[in-house]
Image (cartoon, rainbow, N blue to C red):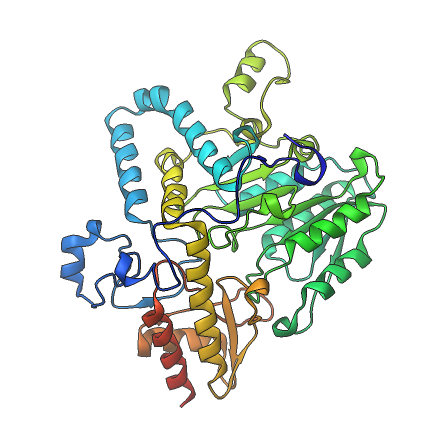
Length: 446
């Protein structure tokens, strides 16, 4: 493994584009069978029940669902793996745990590591993004007076985890505003705003790859350069760690956050990756793991045997050591690798092109409507799959209700003090879904 810029990368891997089985933004739609309406036809509930398990997604065909980014519908192969593991647990729980758990947890960790382009021992398994963020920010080795810089745009989970840490031991938290108008955000201005707030006391930069509040995607590589500049000639224990909540880029972007320069990466796997619900990961470079103390006891064998021998687990690997122990939804975690396999087969470049293509089509369609303001940047380098907008004279909550009740389109409201109407086209959608959403919003404005 390398140190410094690419400390946890595998130098043998080509990360940006994987070979896929499909091509083009429309390739993941109806023709491939991965879209919501794989055969192009809406069917009633009885028909869905008859062949539901044969479809890649079993989303209700009565709706155009553009909110799978909130909580994923399990793809067919994930459903089948969960059912298989659940059957084994139901048949003989203790035998299944004894024979399967270590190998299947290692397989899940290995699949995540391969997807990120890093090493298996550097991946911790969690239940969610929130759990991962709490483990990282509670465990950071900080002294009173040390500063963690975050942004005004981050979600509750980051802000609250940092507030609780500051309340407990005197760590200071500083927030930077990266943009006033998200639609005109720029990579340069965001990087400059971060650079201006980093000080000799800063020990971590806590950011979110894609803001769920606006759909703005941060220029991670640019921020990594800013951090590298601030770290120049600093001793190891004072270097700033770039910590990334990557949930709304993970499973969309072809580029790995490891390659883009993140020191710590946290994400749930049950959103854009379409992994089992209740799964997540934390990945970190070796030098970053050295500065994060475990919070919840691990059930890793090295840690457990160290306890039996009355010593600290000095021989435990960082990822397993940081994986919370205790009983959890085993069948879901053991099925996690299937989600990574699905994305490999589709092709990461193709998944990105499909998702970005649908998001661009949606933004362009909404922007043409009177009384609609798209707040997510049009440029794909500053956005991913989320699309946020405002409707003049109509609150986001009312818009969501009317879209669902009057037009069968499922959207969401951004859960922030300033709220927007939000869509998220994904590999479960096709161009017809996007066009239906645009026409539904047009009807609301009529």
